[in-house]
Length: 603
Image (cartoon, rainbow, N blue to C red; front, side, top):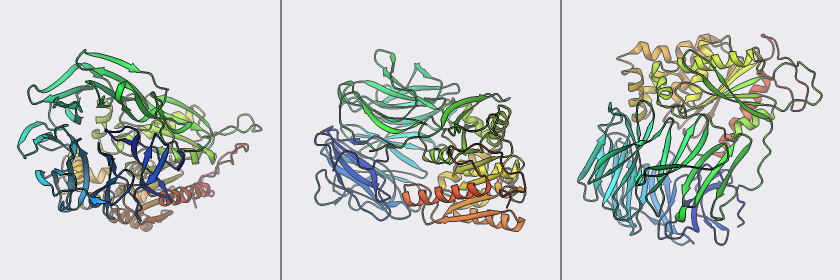
C-alpha cells in the first residue's frame, strides 16, 4: 500500500527500538480506528487488526512484534501480539485478568510489564515474559498507570492519580517496593512520571515536578533518590522524554496555545531551544543520532509529520484547505488576561461595508486539564466553512498558562469558567467581532458541562447550545461515574454530595435547567462511564418539565475512543441544529444581521 493511507495523526507512529524503519500506528479503516504497520524502507503498510469497534492501543517491541489491546465494549480486554510481517496472533500475557489497559512496556530481552484495572476497581501491575503467564508484583486500590521499566527489567514504575499516598511507586521485578515518591497532594508539589532512561545500567527515572510557580525536571535513582533540577525551570506545562542514545532530554512545552521544544542536558546543565514552526506539536520524539520526529499543525493546517533525518513517515494524503482568517486576542479581567483563539469566515468580496459580524460559536474545550491550541480542529473547520466565527477560550483552569491559572479551576467549580466565557463574549462584541444577538456554545465532555452551566446561569447571553456527552447532574454523575472521577469530585468540592450538597447544587446544570432559554441540542452516549447516561436523562427530564426547547441524540458508544461514523453523525446533526437556530450567511455571501429574538432561533 502507498504511503498516503488515511492516518489520524494525533500521535507519531511507535518505532521499533531494534529497527527504526519498522513502525506501528493507528489509522482509519472504513470509519474505525485500527492498527497498521509501516515500513519506512519500502513505504508499505499492512493492516494488523480488524475489530467491529476498532482498536486504539498499540505498541511495537525491539523484536518487531506488534502489540494491540483487544477490548470489549466496556474497554476491558487483553494484550495480543504478532510478528511485524504477519503470522499467528498470540496472547501477550496469557492468564492475565481482563481489565482496562493502563500501559504496556516491553524490554529488549522480552520482559513485559503491564498495568490493568480489573472490573472491581484498583490497578494491578503484572510482569512476565512475552507470551507467558505473568505474575502480579503490585496492587493499588486507586487508578494507576504504568510509567516505565528499566532496560534490564529489574525496576518498574507505577504512577497514581491525585489523592494517592504516592505519586509514583517504584517496585522491583520480584515485588519489593524500592521507593514511594511523594503523593500528588504533597505540599512540596506534584510529580508527573515520564519513563526510565533507555541506557542500560542507568536505572534513572525521569519526572516533571510541578511547583507553585512553574515546572522543573526531576530524576530518581536508587542511589541518589529524588532530585529536582531547580536550574531547569519552565513557567508553563511540560512533558519530557529521553534521547534514545544519550543522557539528554527532549522537553515539549505548551505555552499560550502553542508548543516549544527544548533539548536539555542534565549532566552539562544546559538548555537549548529546538527550532520548529509556530503552531502546535501534537507529538515529538527524539531519535538515534540526535534526530527529531514531530507532528506539527496550526489552525490553518491539518497535522503533518516532519523529520530531521529524512525518515519516510506515513502521510495523511490530500489535506483539506482550511478556510477563514485565524488570529488571537487577550481579554483583560480582574483575575488576569484570558487568551482566545479566534477564527473568522472569509469575508464576502461583494459584502456591504459595515455589515454585521458573523454569528459566533464558542467552541468550549474539555478536560478540564487541557487547553485549546493553535491546531487544526475539524469542528472549527466545519463551522468556519459554514459561515460562523469560532472563539476558542482558554478560561481559568486551562493548561498552558502556568500552575496558578490551572489551579484557579478549584476556586469554584464551573462558575469562574463561565465568567471567563462571558467576559470574552463581551470583549468580542465591544470590538465588533461578534454580534450580541448571535452567539452560541458548543462543547464536549467537560466543555459540554460548561455549555449547560452557561446557558442556565447566563441565559440572556446565548442564542443556542450544543452539549455532547456532558456532566449535567453532578449528584447523579458522582454516584454513577468511575472511581477516579468520584475522587476528583471530592477534591474539587471538598466532600461528597452528602457532605457538601450545596456546593454540588451550585455547580450543577440541573439546578439551572428551568432557566435555560436558548434552544439546546444534547448528545449522550449509552455506554459512557465518565458522563453516564442516567445523569443526562435527569437533566433532559428537567428541560421537558420546564418547557425548554431542546433536541436529544443518543449514541451507542462510550465516552472515549474513535468512532468516525458517530463523530460525523454528531457533526452533521449539530450543524443542522445551528443552521436552524443560529443561521449564518453562506460562505462567500454578503453578511446579514441575525434574526431578532423570537425569530427562528427561539423555536
